[in-house]
Image (cartoon, rainbow, N blue to C red; front, top):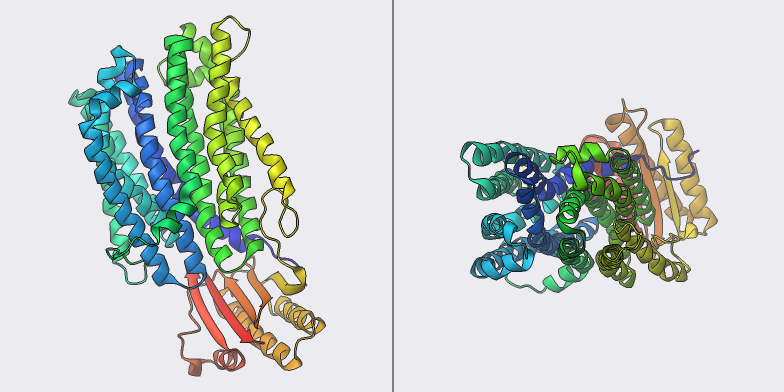
Length: 575
């Protein structure tokens, strides 16, 4: 008999979100990357650097999207896990309306203060014109960008990752094509690059918006109150702080590079930040695949499922980031060539910088993935250590080592980023280890009491089902439950699983059915998951099958959800 839960179904749910989530992250990063590559080849490296100089603004917009979108979607996922779709729709409406309102305010303020903002971002006179031309268009489109990002998060949460994939792919194709037309054909330089990026956002919105016209999706209604905004911002605050402080880090690093490392330093830093975009695409893809699945599993009380999907997220991060790090370590010359740099001091500095920056990328992403775990399980102090530490400590270490290098010390300032990340880990570690009892080490996911939980995966065969049902009955009887209740639970689970095996998974011998029986105050709850075709036994006519009728007669309540392309049936009995 299978005596433990396998990761088959949660891994499949994670993979179902992964492509869309990676492309969602790409939408917020690739537009700038494409603009930078186009400008470096068709204008000059200074134009490429100007794009980097505007990054604090786009990063601030993304920070606000993270504050609202991540916080709102995590709470909405927990609500869906608790079978409260009306509450999830209310959270979605509040987030969408607030994002547009903030975007309009930022567009107005940024346009009025464009000149002082440009001077703050770009002390270098030669690059200021480029910076202003790009910034002018991007700031005006702030509400479009913010709405696009939060819609991507909620459409993904709402079980339509393929629509997000389509939206982002079309967006990137339009951006690439329009970049060439506006920069090369029309000669609009920085303004053309910005117009192409904003147009690509509009294309994404046009694909995403129709999702909410379907009757079975999250519903938008103009919110009459903002009472839930406090909960949303509280849940999303560590993400918002971390992302906003990255804007501060980028600005500080730019100023340090220009002051202590000169023109080659700012060009090298710009390339490092463009490469960081690739790691952010990977990290954000993992986060946005993990968060909706983990939030819904947490809402249903499935802590073991959260741990399984976290393991999948780390496996994806480890493989993807290792490949990126190897590219940075062994191919710095090739990367420099992509950005139009083929020799001189800039190439020499890039060869020193990229291997060191690879270590920064690996440490940063590995630590950052812990933020949603700590938030979901209310270890908010640890989440804030990462939120404040990750942007600030690497910046300070880079500043210190650049200052030492400018004074003749034999140090590689680019290692400052990785040293700062290691310092964050050292600060975090004793606090995480100090939390003992009822938590998994370091990640601090709640551990289920084995005496109160029976959690297995069943192969789609009657033999495996019979062994599992015997296990359920033995487990309940050993805990002293009324024999009549034991029979009711066993019969309902057996009929439900048998129906899945015979109809939903008849040709999927490699599949699994997850059965989780948990005891809480006053009730026993069984949750059954499978990847078969959608089938709602709660709304089906019991007259069509003896099994459905038997399940309804032996339980006190039934609930059904179709999430992650999986059937989730919850059956309850009062004790």
